[in-house]
Amino acid sequence: MITVESPYSFDETVKRLKEKMYGLGAEVLAEIDHSTNAKKVGMELEPTVVIYFGNPKVGTILMQEVREIAYELPLRVVVWTSSGKTYVGFRKPSEIGKEYGIKNNDILKKMDSLMENILNI
Image 1: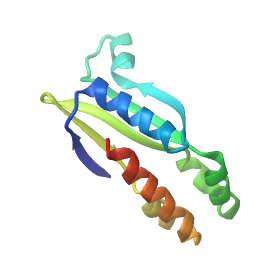
Image 2: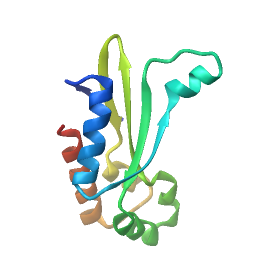
Image 3: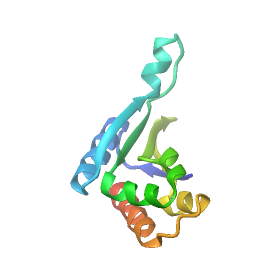
């Protein structure tokens, strides 16, 4: 996993990431708030969310090549705070694609570029 520190607060980082995702043509499909879920069971966890996003026109191409990659899609980023700092973590799509034997390197490179652009908030 690649981890980068955000210069913004947790809430601002999440907001900017989602805006960037939409702006680059991706759809935010789900957001899992792990800290809220922890509270529901009487536990504490600093703010932690996973944002799932993607574009079916792209992901479907990979699934047509190797169906099992569907387990890794849609793409996702994790955002969390620790000791007052905010972090974003993700896996490069090209690395995930290698694990599944995806041969369509053009799509994987475009997906890597999308991730880099999204993180440029």
